[in-house]
Length: 241
Ligand SMILES: [Zn+2]
Ligand SMILES: [Zn+2]
Picture 1 (tube, rainbow, N blue to C red):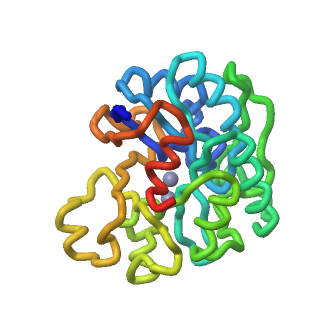
Picture 2 (tube, protein in one colour):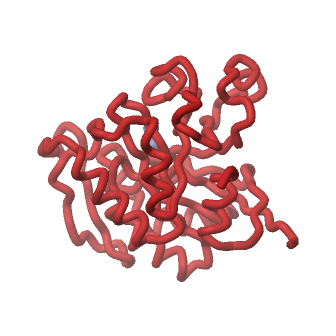
């Protein structure tokens, strides 16, 4: 089958993340991604999927593939990007993660608002519980839980000190089973891979981790997929399935 090249950015925060800019609304994100010439994006708020429904609907209108996702904070304070082939899968995963999270009330004056929007960018809710906390899920279990909901998972910004798996554990543990790893936009990829043996054989994903509209990736990172669908993206990233 002919492969298709998808230009992507699979690590984006909306205004549901306390650190995400108020302008990171479902429609603004989709429209900026379109302006940048991206084919596929994912919404990955901290420990939450509350704006996934709205952005998927906005993406559908504009002809951009939008994967529902989450940037999970593990019990070790490691950030993992979890992506799903369906909204139901993402919401089921979210429910399971929430059950392991400590209940801490958000202080918007300190951490920022956590807004839930509809697909017309109207505010329809406010998340009360602080989302930037460590969940109770250990890093070795994230991939198998994600797969159970028809998704996949890979370490976020593995080259960074804050929330980066290599900084925290010294390496990407084999037991975690990851097939891919994300490196941040400023990473010198060849030398980072050369210096970190545990990245060997993993698919490298490059995302922006945008919290502001202007940080969304340019049309420069691409992946070859079998077709333009959410499940093909998940399959490509989870290449050992
Ligand atoms: Zn992060
Ligand atoms: Zn992030």
